[in-house]
Length: 281
Ligand SMILES: NC(=O)c1ccc[n+]([C@@H]2O[C@H](COP(=O)([O-])OP(=O)(O)OC[C@H]3O[C@@H](n4cnc5c(N)ncnc54)[C@H](OP(=O)(O)O)[C@@H]3O)[C@@H](O)[C@H]2O)c1
Image 1 (cartoon, rainbow, N blue to C red):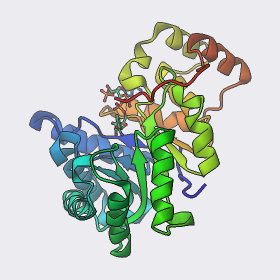
Image 2: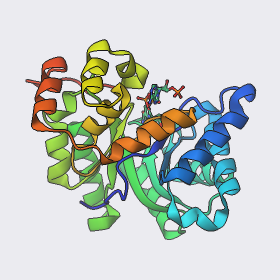
Image 3: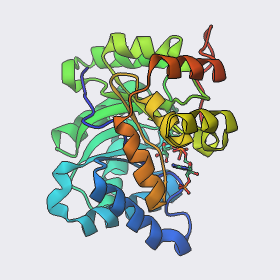
């Protein structure tokens, strides 16, 4: 792999910062996650119009900026900002909101109007200035990944200076990528960042999943997360603003599922038998 996640579970922050009433609790939730061991935080300039990044920044500051190097901070540029100069401006603004000197991984949120060459040029400027360490993409299927690889080749980029990760929807209820995208990522040595690993919350309300989890002494959320991270080179990034659920999700990192459990899950959530279009939230 060109980039190895040092963790199996990270923290999602979509929808944080949307309301003034909940902001203080959300900052405390992020701080709690970081204090119990979470290392990777996923945010985006799009989330709450930058307010999610502001909250992550406040939590990082409260935890102590001297600890910044322990964390993997991931943010995303909107496709509408992904021109060569737009990427640089967007990243500078994200860093200001986050109160950070650099991002560990900067992603193109989804494919937009600008050529990949332009976006990559922006990413290269950011790398040369030390503002990002790695670049990645999100919501890319194989066709886009191939075009991205071509753009990297045409710019002469190689090895660790190429795509680190693809962040896509992957959960028991969205298994389509197992058919061809996961094998393609493996072949390209690109790590998988699995978003909405709880099906945006739907899976924890799935009675059959929760019943199976109970027989194993787990919660539905833990079973759903342990299943996602059974994939090698994968980090799952569940979002929660509840300290208890943040702890529950974190504890799934050490759960190893038996063949029987995996088979039972295949019966409940059928693996893909053909190519499906990429699921996007
Ligand atoms: N790149 C992209 O286009 C993209 C798209 C979607 C998401 N993402 C990223 O992926 C992250 C996760 O995805 P997501 O937020 O859509 O969905 P998710 O993590 O699958 O599910 C989050 C929902 O589940 C609830 N929840 C979390 N842990 C729980 C538990 N142990 N028991 C019961 N309920 C639980 C949360 O509520 P509480 O907060 O109340 O616990 C929230 O409603 C996002 O936050 C974002 O960072 C990226």
